Image (cartoon, rainbow, N blue to C red; front, side, top):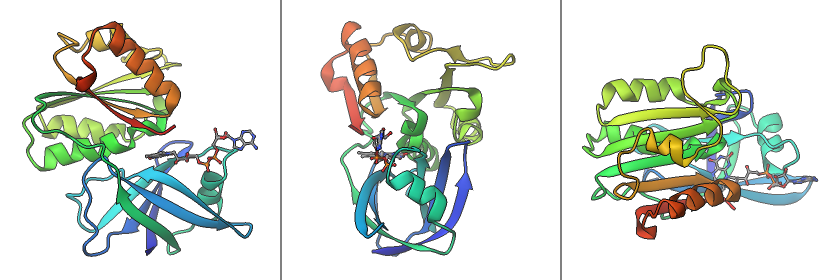
Length: 230
Ligand SMILES: Cc1cc2nc3c(=O)[nH]c(=O)nc-3n(C[C@H](O)[C@H](O)[C@H](O)COP(=O)(O)OP(=O)(O)OC[C@H]3O[C@@H](n4cnc5c(N)ncnc54)[C@H](O)[C@@H]3O)c2cc1C
C-alpha cells in the first residue's frame, strides 16, 4: 500500500522517525515491523523497519531509522523522502511480541534497536499492564539515546516501568552506566537473572553479546525472546 509520510522528526544526529498516516484496518501489535520499498536508480530495494509507536495511537504509526552512510535504503530515506511524499509499505509482519504472562520483563536494545521497545513501553503504559518492565538501553553517547524524554515520561506514568542507560562515551554530567551491556549492569537492576524474561533486539553482534551473557548466567533459553536484525 502507498502511505503518506506526514511528519519527519530528527531524534538524534543519525536517527530520524518517519510518521505515516495509519489507514483504517491497519492493525499491529507492538514488536511488529513493516517492509519499506523504494526505487533507487531504477532498482527496487526493500528493508524491514520495526514500528516504533504503540498501536494505541490510532492516527498514525512511525518507523525510526538509523542512517547508514554506506547503505542503500537509509541514505535514500534521509536525503530524498520529504513530508507529503508517499512510500510503498507492506505489513505488518513479525512474531516478536510481549507475553503478558511473563511478570518480569527486561527489554535490552542498543542504538536503533530501541525502536520496538518504544512501541512496547508506551503500549504497556497505555493499556495499564501490571508487568514489571526494565529497559536497558545502550548507545554511543548520551546524545545518541533516542526517545529518552519519552521514557522519562513513561517512568512517571507507569510505576512498573524503569529505564536504565549505558553509553560508550559519557559526558561529565552522565549518571548512567558506561560501556557495553554486561552481566554486572544487568545485576545492578535485576535480583535474580534466571527468574526474569528477556526481550533482546538488534543486529547480530548485539544478539551474540547478550545471548552469550545470558547463557553464562544460566538463564533458561525459553526466557529469551530475540528480534534478530541479522
Ligand atoms: C525485523 C527487522 C527490523 C528492523 N528494524 C529497524 C529499525 O527499526 N530501525 C533501523 O534503523 N533499522 C532496522 N532494521 C535494519 C534495516 O532493515 C536495514 O538493514 C538498515 O536500515 C540498513 O539498510 P541500508 O539499506 O541503509 O543498508 P544496506 O545497504 O543493507 O547495508 C548493510 C550493511 O552493509 C554495509 N555496506 C553496504 N554497502 C557497502 C559498501 N559499498 N561498502 C562497505 N560497506 C557497505 C553497510 O555499512 C551496512 O552495514 C531492521 C531489520 C530487521 C530485519
